[in-house]
Amino acid sequence: MSVPQIQRPDLPERMTWEELERLPDEIAKQIELWDGRVVWVRRGPAEHQVFTRRLTNAIERCTRSAMSEQPEHCWRAELETNVFLGGAGKSDFMTPDFLVFRCLASPYQDVRADDTLLVGEVLSPSNNPTNREAKKGRYAGAGIPWYWEVATAPDASAIAAVRAYVLETAPGHIPEGVHPLRSANYLLVDEWTPDDDGDGIAINFPFPIRIPWTELEY
Image 1 (cartoon, rainbow, N blue to C red):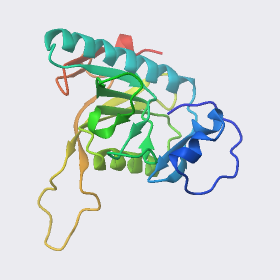
Image 2 (spheres, one colour):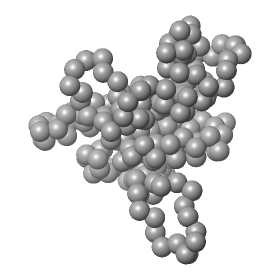
Image 3 (cartoon, rainbow, N blue to C red):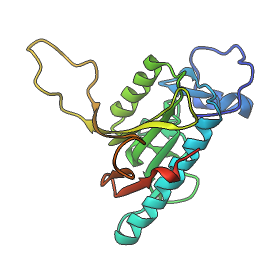
């Protein structure tokens, strides 16, 4: 998520959604609630905003194309939209950089994890790997089928790689007495880089997605 950065006030470690709503908007939009725990999100560089917007626009184009061939489906692609991880309540949410979710029954409804097909994060070189893995684990635990990771180049205004992960809910063979830390995890199923021989991103799930690199250039 990318938001304007201002000085952080002293806040309690835990809050409810109702308490968050009473904060000034420029403060509240810098916060995610993880089971009620306050988690501050950092503002990314200009490249972060550019690639978030271009990925979202490209995926939206693909959703429209897929829906024209499969009119029984309705999907929406958006950027920086709250995804509420529980079936009820609003004090547990994350804000992916881009996402795809099923069309909701009426306008202005909250997007729940059950409605969400794909979430994605645009990673700047300064992103904390521990926080990145924690977010990925929470998306997986919420049952979101697809997770995308977009790595930016450390020394150029460019995308270095795009990785697609699929949700795995059953662990593989592990020794007796060993228990996985999480009940679900993501498996890497494809990776694309501008140096590949292909023209860009190409995958058929959760619907056909074709994005040439020229559509993502800074």
